[in-house]
Image (cartoon, rainbow, N blue to C red; front, side):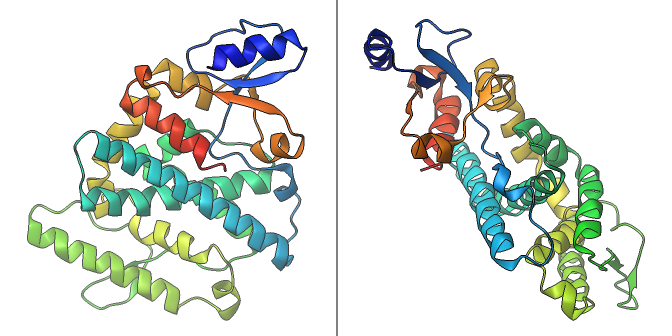
Length: 282
């Protein structure tokens, strides 16, 4: 079907954007091979000044949708593999959404773009997210500082959350301490910091996305899933691409023709990844 479209449009001299993981180079004279980035930040978000509430709300909604869409795509792939697991969904939603939100926001502030490889790097190593959070805090002049909770005296302290538990009972207690730490972090915020639309995500990262935390321990399945996706060269050809990255809002405004190949022959993981990524843009 896509090839028929390309034959026709080339015959009439009409350019077509083609998102096709199977192609390394164009096969038609008016075919433009393009990549896509689920975390693409449109230029309009790069120049937002602190205090512009309307523009910030638009950026917040845009980032939240991208973060949730990617988390949903990973859940769908996990379920296709017969691994439907409510706990995986909870971990995926918390970890993926928080990290994607922080990375996209930081990229928008710095006028750069991130890729799935950047997201995977931070999911693989939670320590990497702290530098991005620090830059965001400086940009918004957020005074909040991460402190864990001392379960003995219930006071905040600046040392990292404790080492991984040895027993299930320890793990439950550790999760409870992390929840308590998050609650206390929020209570200690200034009224001004509480108004920031990203503060909840920042606190989630500071309290739960730390080396040795329960989320760190249970994110192994999530890491394996993304690692397997990135091992497929077709995924990297489209999602981590040196090609032109397509802006779906722009092609809709310009009435550009775009075709997408999500053939099942790519395998259920890769096909689902592409289809979910593309369909979420509309």
